[in-house]
Image (tube, rainbow, N blue to C red; front, side, top):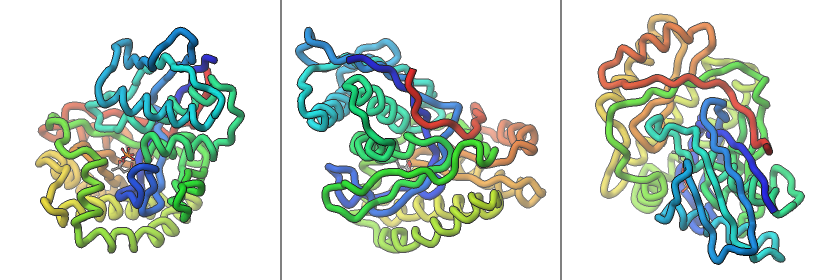
Length: 325
Ligand code: DP6
C-alpha cells in the first residue's frame, strides 16, 4: 500500500487556456508541451489503517491549507476510482521545482501524486488512464505523464472519458532546450485558475483564441517531426502572445507581464535579429521561458543574465515521463 513516483514539470508550447468544465477540468482547446528534466516532484503515498484523515508533507513540512484540500480531494477521486479502498493516506512530496522559476509545481506535483497513489493501490492502469486521472488534479499535469513532447486532447465527451494526454515525440527525438528566466518581480496576483475563468467568461478575444488552435497544432507537430526549430519556436511564441492577449480583453483586464518580462521578450527578439535562433513563451506569471538549441547555450545564457531585473537563468533539457522508484 506504499509507492513512490517521480514526475517532471512541463512547459506548454501550445497553451491550455480555458475550461469548458471546471469540476472535471475539461479544456476548451488541445494543448502541447515539452517535459523538462530540470524540475520534478518526488512523491511517496502510503495508505494506512491507523490514519483518520489524509496527511500531506511538502518538503518535510506539514501542509494544511488550500494545497492540502486539493491533495485530499484528489485522493478521494483515486479512492472512488479504486472502489474498494477507503483508507486514508500519508503523502510526502519533495519539490525540485524552484517556485521562483515560475513553473507551476502543480504539473509535476499532481502527476507524481497520481502515479504514486495508483501504484500504492496496485491499480494496473495505462498511461492514458493515468493521464486522465491526473487531469482532474491539475489540467497541465496530465501532459507530465510522458517524456518529450505530449499533446492533451481536449476530448468531446461530457464525462471527460476521452480527455487525456498522448505522446507526440519521445525525449530523445530532439535536443531542444529551455532557459527559465527568473525575474525579481513579485508572485502573480491572478492564479491560472482564476485567470482562465475570467477570460472565458468575459474576454471577447477568447473565441478567436480557441478557433486559432487547430492550425497552430497541426503546424507545430509537423515542425517537431521535422526538428524545424524556427517553425516550432515561431508558432510557440505567437501562441503565447495570443494567450496573453486574451487576458487584456477580460473584464476586469489583467496581464501577467512586468516591465522585465517585456525586456526579456525584446532581448530574445534582438538575439534573433543577430542570427541566434531563440523564442520565448510565458505561462500565467511574469517569468519567461526561452527555447534554444544546444549550440547557442553559452551566448544565450550570458545575454539573458545581463538584463537588469533578471535574477537567475535555469537551463533545462527535454525530460522523461513518470517513473517509479
Ligand atoms: C498558462 O494546469 O495550472 O500554464 O487546470 O486549473 O490546475 P488548472 O490549471 P493549470 O494551468 C496552466 C495554464 C498555463 C498553460 C499550460 O500549461 O498549458
